[in-house]
Image (cartoon, rainbow, N blue to C red):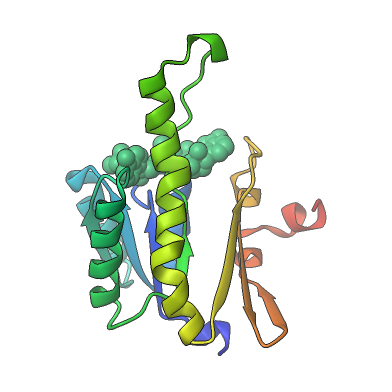
Length: 178
Ligand SMILES: NC(=O)c1ccc[n+]([C@@H]2O[C@H](COP(=O)([O-])OP(=O)(O)OC[C@H]3O[C@@H](n4cnc5c(N)ncnc54)[C@H](OP(=O)(O)O)[C@@H]3O)[C@@H](O)[C@H]2O)c1
């Protein structure tokens, strides 16, 4: 399966910032993008802009901090993707700043639920279906403030062939610094 046969991407936090830039880029490449976020107005605006530019997009409104929501999102995304999701961009995340000794348990749980638990269960739900289709994905988000192009790198692998899909997101200057 070549990169050209990847048709559907699920992008958590695809309604803002880096996730939205990734959604726009993937849509420009002809991929059906399904963006997830809580704010319906922002989600619908994102989808309208992508569709207005000739792309294919859908929005799922969800708070991903509990596993049952993740299950609902993956179920709906698979329906929208006609039975499959080929690319998962685990991007939704929060990063409240502050000293460790002032972090409350509630704040910790919020960060952990969205940044750790949700990606874990999204992979758990989608990876088996991807594997059945002969797809494997590793998505890394690099913490390099100031250069968002380096934060998102998607590796697509099949039968020993590896395509650095992430290269599509990176200008030449960023690629040469890796
Ligand atoms: N910007 C940076 O310098 C930087 C640096 C290091 C790492 N990162 C990481 O890169 C990712 C994107 O950063 P960004 O700056 O582009 O973020 P952003 O603009 O704040 O966007 C965050 C996205 O996540 C969604 N989201 C937040 N809470 C959610 C929840 N509970 N359930 C579902 N969706 C939720 C938001 O939509 P709603 O609010 O509508 O839910 C939004 O679409 C994050 O994981 C961040 O930790 C960013």
